Image (cartoon, rainbow, N blue to C red):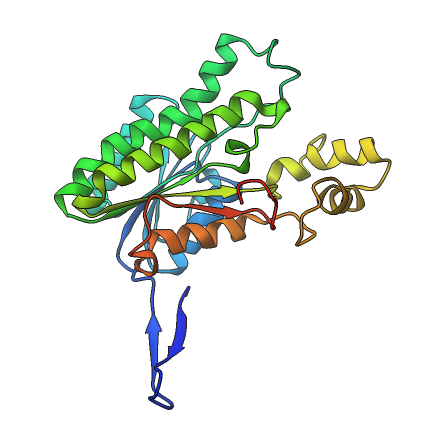
Length: 277
C-alpha cells in the first residue's frame, strides 16, 4: 500500500496513517496494456482500486483480479466511450481517469512529417484526452469528486526534433490540464499532469528498439549504451533512466486523497533533468 506513517508532534509513540483511500474507487486507465500504463494498473490494484483497463491490445491485463478489460481504439470517440460505458455498467461510477495512451513515432524532420502523421499523433495522444475528459467529467461533477491524471512528457517543455508532433501533442495536454483544473476545481474535480523523462518502457528493449539503436551509435553493448545515454548524453543527475513504476507512483499519489490539495500541477519524473524544472 502507498501510505506514509507520520508521528504526531508531542504525542510520543502515537502515529497516524496517511492513506491513499483508493480502496473501492473506480479508475479508468487508457493505454493500460503495457509499459507505464500496466505499471499504473498494478499500483492502483495494490491500493484496492477497481480498474477499467482500455487498450487496443489488452491481453497483458487478462486474468488480473480487479481489472475489467476493454479492447478499444482510443483514437476514436467510440473507443473512449466504450471504456467509460464499461466503467459505469460494471461499477456505476468513475472516480479516477488516467489519460496514458500515446505513441511517439520517430521523425526524420518537421518538413517530412505529413498532415496524416500529425493527425494520427494528435488523435491518439491529445484528442483521446479531450474525449475521455469530456465523457467522464459530468459523472465526476455529479458526485462532486474526481481525479484526472494525464501523462505528458518533458518534451512538452523542450521539444525533441525527432519527435516534433509528439512534443506538440504533449504540450497541448499540459495546457488543457490547466484549463480543466481551473474550470472544474470548484466542482470537486482535480486535474494534474505527470511528465516523465526518459523511461525504460518496452520500446527500449524490443529488438531493434531504442536500446539497440544506442548500442550501434555508441559502439557499446546495450546496457552500457543506455548508461552512457543517461549519464553522458542526457546528464541526468540520478544517472539512470526512469522505470514505469516510478511514473506510476506519481500517478497513484495524484489520484489519491494524499493529493487532495493538488490540482493544475505538473509533476516531473525525469531523474533531475533540467527539462521542465
